[in-house]
Length: 416
Image 1: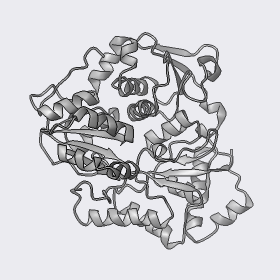
Image 2 (image 1 turned 120 degrees about the vertical axis):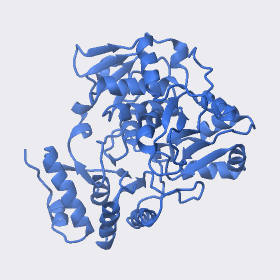
Image 3 (image 1 turned 120 degrees about the horizontal axis):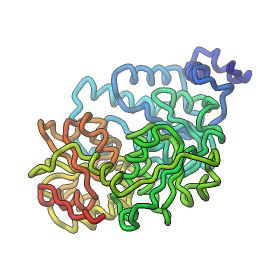
Image 4 (image 1 turned 30 degrees about the vertical axis):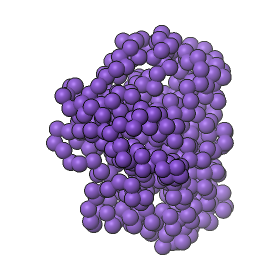
């Protein structure tokens, strides 16, 4: 199938400026993907502003030099620096300077300085059924699944090219027929107490991603809406352990009022999740044998919401931490924490607030051979060993706090 560009798209692609370069990138990507046309988008979330090498900085600066500007609302995922000054980044020159240049280039392109992997909790929530071009795996899966907007997993640097052109290839999850479920992930065999617990959602997300890969599935057996933070944790873990871009939860997510409505056929594959499967998935999130001490706790992947900071503060209850809790969040939440002095109280207790970035994408935690990190994040558990060198212990937020106070592992939620 050949790609057909409109006269306007052809004229843009013929240009020598930054917009022309962006249109050629989008068009060539569409050809490679077999898309018949480009479609208009209403917003973008840009993952390409995280420094991985000088080429990314030079690419963004070339777009700026060519006069390019985003054509749609475009928020930014995390960068490599904490521009708010909350945390100390151990990135040295010349990499530090190149990372700053990269972040500045995306500002000049007209992107919002959001610097968060949870833009959907910072006011960027495209309408149900709208086409967008989002990067960052957890943001993509939340956008598709919870908001019901339509995007594929747009990588670096196709995301900014789509934002500049206001176009995306017409393929994949932009098409309604590709969004229907082909399997059922049935959790009705799990106890209500487990499903109601905070710890369940990263565990089930990790299991879901490994079981389904990139297949669209529908989760059955959830009685009540678990809330945005639980769905955020589920989607992030699923997108880390598998190639998940969209999930449905019957009676919860907007395209699945029930199982039957969203299924693509009458006889789907069914995965019956047992307590043993959930226990194995939970154990698999830890890479460290239970040690005598821990060296750090990291939470906030995806970035912590204001409600999650409420919970963190209640759990700390004015105590002093023995080891630091690195709490990653966006500047939209940081502004709220600073309004009534809560940031100062949290930092006084030993919390290290990290804004604009997170501990697994840039060096923040001390370099420590044999270090042990505790987390309640399925995504942190997946990426931290390779990105930080720390072994991981997975636990609930309550146990993360108790362990940070004690300086050694504390597990109290085994019943859940």
